[in-house]
Length: 435
Image (tube, rainbow, N blue to C red; front, top):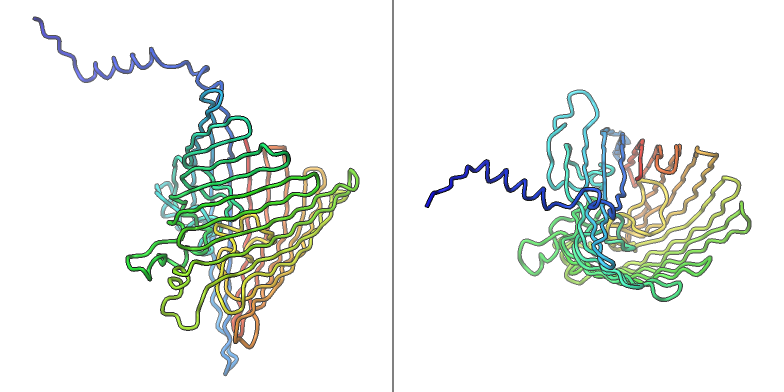
């Protein structure tokens, strides 16, 4: 018998040829693939100033800080039909942030793994890391038959209490009743998103039971929803349970009525209730005398009109109690009524918060200009005075076409309490292309 020897290179080459021979032609492979996503560039500049007055001498001490950075994000989602009922979605993201300023970009071009995608410690959209990252952001399989859709895998949560947060699990959506949609989900492996205010409490979940404790995003999330759209009225009813942390409930009522082709009136009302779990309440302020966290309510109301390119809205918000900490939303401000850019945060708060706001915008062809004004106070049990807070925002926009937008805003925030005054100036420019 004659032996036949083959080099490793030859084996690899033959394997490649075999794969090519049996491969699906590119045109056929991509004909049922839909691609969507966006490319976005942001520039942020923030300046803060803290002024503390000595109650005895009236002498003031000021501390100033500033930062600025560039950020580029490319997000692409590929949806492929597997057969008549099954489909799959894979989403990838490239993200890069560089600090602006001479001799400060020490991490430009370096890879950062596992950075947090959100606002944290004043970073306005980033978890504090500089550099770049590329990852498969979402991957799930869907099954659709008649009015029922089932999704399994890593996917956007899509709840009232979250914004763009991801989780791994199962979601079911049913729209077989006229004007109604029902949904249910069970998720774990939640994204470590910087817009989760309760993450700032640290690894405190379960500390009272022993062990090292965990972050709030390391718990499972379960939720159900009923959504109704009835001509000019829409209704949302949500319930969720963040394991070992809190129950969250929300009712959202919306009104949208066209009086004429050029005149519209609209309004929205929010009512939410949060009940923190007993163990978590103990974990949050273990050893801190007098501090507590418990059940809290959120309610908000806004009304507005649109006519001849003008949009005007006014609203009122009230949430929290003067003797405790609480939260109404889990990640970012979710579906709740909000105005301004940097002042309002429903993911973790203290005291009784009351705010009113007005917003105005004028759009002419491709151009827009607008402004927000938010003012309110926070009351604490036993305090002689309230915290006074306000935010003023100016906005400019240019819509080049349906896919390309240029927007910018300038936000000025002031917080006053006793002998301390904090100011923040935040400018953002954004160019975004949707595809």
